[in-house]
Every structure is written in structure tokens, then in C-alpha cells.
Image (tube, rainbow, N blue to C red; front, top):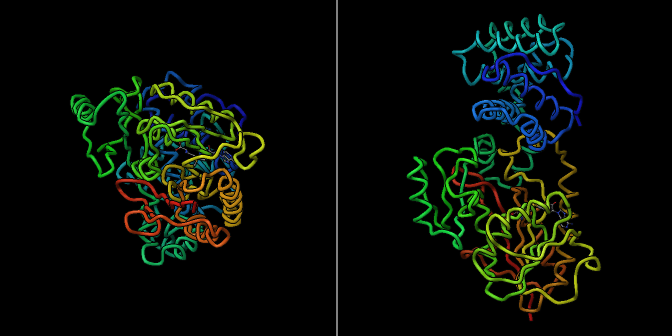
Length: 435
Ligand SMILES: C[S@@+](CC[C@H](N)C(=O)[O-])C[C@H]1O[C@@H](n2cnc3c(N)ncnc32)[C@H](O)[C@@H]1O
């Protein structure tokens, strides 16, 4: 993990050079193996003075550069004779990304990138200047360089492309393309505090356009800072992807039922279950820091659950032996369905990680099944688009458990949502334990 403090950039806080310097730290951190979202959260906490524009610019530069990392990398391979320091590699990738997005700003981008180098690594100013000017001269060749490599063409590692192709032979190209778009921002209304029309009216009054989907998720026309959402602090609404808003509906918990949310943080689905039913809910979470987020989310929304920090596979550590009527198993997974929100993961994950996730998911399913009451239902959820974690996982589980019965979802054996303009990629399967 990258932790060495970097000299504060001297450019004005609202300049492209400043945003490039900060985004360079983030992208270099990911090249070294760091988690992008966590690094950005830390950086924001260190800079409470940042105006929204600066926050947005740093985020946009880092996120879009990592979404397109495979492309920038292919271009750089033709322009560099030896590997530069990681910060310079990151800065060059950012500048190339900006040049692809805004070719009309070519000279500003080069000047600001060179300015950012002058502050952080003055000795490498000439290198950055030379590589970027050469890049501009050779711009007509970029497309050919990108097209000649699968990793650059799709902006995904080759193993990922192969896995998506195997899992979705009909839709793999659209799926990969959707993974490189900007994700939508969707809201969930808390019916304990407001009605849908009230929230829609408040959004309209604030000049925020949105559309309602068939599961009552509100998709905003343009994402914005959470703090600017009217009613968020008061718990009238939450930010939650529209695809994730199927979980509580499909689980269908009723008033008074005993419900387990086995992998609960940050608590979006926990809260949604409780907004829909007065259930006796136990929320488990392995990571104590993330468990704190469940607590804060429920408090903001005025909801209550029992929360335990525990590994859901270790029943002795948390289960009192009373069976659950419904279980939500929103298991840890590759997150391949939400990669456009976390573009670092496609470059940090390895193909072998998927088998490890699948093994962990199987262990979780085995343990939780023992806690489900006969006649009870378990909803298995991932935010993955890989078959091994989804339909393949559930098929293997059903082969091992003669008492497991699949309940259809909207007339199908399961529900695989693929990322699109409305929502992210999710997988849902509903299992009933035969009485
Ligand atoms: C996909 S996220 C859950 C998202 C959450 N359900 C929501 O909608 O906000 C999976 C969560 O499971 C937690 N986790 C991973 N392994 C676990 C385990 N063995 N027992 C309990 N929680 C686990 C992770 O820390 C992570 O917070």
C-alpha cells in the first residue's frame, strides 16, 4: 500500500495540474496494489477544504484512467523505451486519458502534466514533456495500437474477457462495453419517513431530474454529491443501485419473521428489508469497521436490528440455535458486476481469485443452510457476472442438498441482471428448504 506523504502540489486547487497531481497518487497507488475507493476516501478526509469541483475532477480523472488502463498502457508501450517510476507512469496514463477524452485541450493537458511533474519529481519534467509531445505527434497511430491487443480493445485483462465470453456467449461484448461506462446513481425511498411522490417532488424542487423504475428505484439523470440530496441526512432516502433494490423485494420478509442478513455491510439491503417489514433481523458482518457503517446507516434511517461482528461460517460464534425464516446471503464475490464503480478491481484481481471466491461462497452457503428453518427461504446474491459464482454455484449447491428447492424469479430459475444504463450487474437465486 502506498503511504509515503507526497509534497503538496503548488498549483491552484482548481487547476487541472492540481487534479492531475492528486489523481497521480491514486493511480500510482492502484498500480502498487492499493484499493482505489479507500485511498480516495482517505485523501478526501485529508482535504476537507476541497471544493466539490476539485473532488469531482480528481475522482473523474483517476476513475476514467483506470477504466481505460488497458488502452493507455498499450499506447505507452509504443512510446517508452524503459519503465519509468510508477508516479510518472501514472501521470502519463492520466494525461493520455485526458487527451483521448478532450483532444481539443492537447496543449493545456501537456503543460499541466509537465507542471505537475515539476512539483513532484522535477528531474523527470523533460521525460514527461517528451513522451506526451511524441504521443501527440503519433496520435493517428493510437487506434491501431489499441485494436491490436484484446486487453486494450476491451479495456479488460484477457482472462476477464475470456470469462465474460464463457459466462455470456450472446452478450459478452455489450457486457464488457457497459463495464467501461459511467455508472448511474439511484435512490431508494424510505417509506417510514417519506412517500415516493414526496421525494420525487423534493428532487424536482432542487432541480434534480430522475426517473422511476418498476421496482420504485429512482435513477438520477446526473450523479451528484450525496450531501446535496434533499432529505438524505433526514433519512428520507438512501443511495443504492437499482439492481440491488431487488434483494429486499425478492426476499419478501414479513412482519415478525426472524431474518438473517449474513453479510450485511454497509447495510443497504439490511435497511431496505427493515423499511419493508417489521422483522426481527440479525445482521452479521465480518469486518468490524464495515459493521460500523451498518450501524450508522440504520441510525440515519431510524431502523433497528441486532448487529454482530462475526464470520457467518462459524455458527458457534454467533448462532443461538433458533432457525431463521428468511436468510439473505449477499456473499463476498469478484464484484465483476460493479466494475465500472471500482475500476481498480479488474487490474488487481487475478483469474485464480474467482475460484477462491467460489470456495468461500460455497462454505457460506453450507453454514447458513443449517440455520434455515424447514419451509424457510434463502436468497443468494452476488454482484458478479461470472457463472462460477452465480448459476454454477447454485447448481452445485442444489446437487449437494436434496432438501433445496429452487423458487422461480419472475418465471425464470434465477435472475442475472447485467450492467446497463439503469443498474449494475447482480445475480439472484431463491432457495427454499423443503419442510
Ligand atoms: C457484498 S458485501 C454486502 C453488501 C451489503 N449486503 C449491502 O447491501 O450493503 C459482502 C460483505 O460481506 C462481508 N463478509 C465477507 N465474508 C464474510 C463472512 N464470512 N461472514 C460475514 N461477513 C462476511 C464483507 O466484509 C462485506 O462487507
